[in-house]
Amino acid sequence: MDVIDKVKMHARVSHSMEDPLIQDYIDFAKHDVIEAVYDSHDPNLDKEGLGKDPSFQKAVIMLSTYYYEVRVPISDRKAVEMPFSVTHAIQTLRAHRDRYLS
Image 1 (cartoon, rainbow, N blue to C red):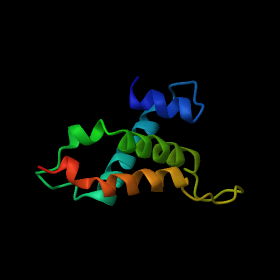
Image 2 (cartoon, rainbow, N blue to C red):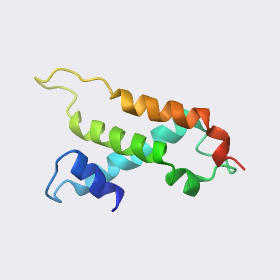
Image 3 (tube, one colour):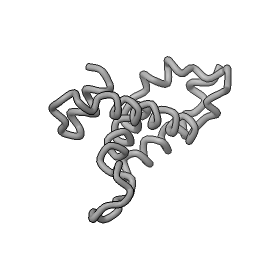
């Protein structure tokens, strides 16, 4: 299953009208998670291997869903903090950061 399908399932999105927007959020989340742990421009970073890491996948899916759900900064909805599971996944990646550096 593609990442976009996992994010849509997690966010309970059953249509494809917002797929480009959701893909943008996935791209933003991947970059943000990598930057929280590594330098994304480091030539020694194994991004392919990192992409297969369950903690990375979890962080990207959860963060993408968060971005999708709170995409309107000005609204009558109360601001919601980022889920702890994203922070936990990033901390797990930090603990094992040497795995994806050659």
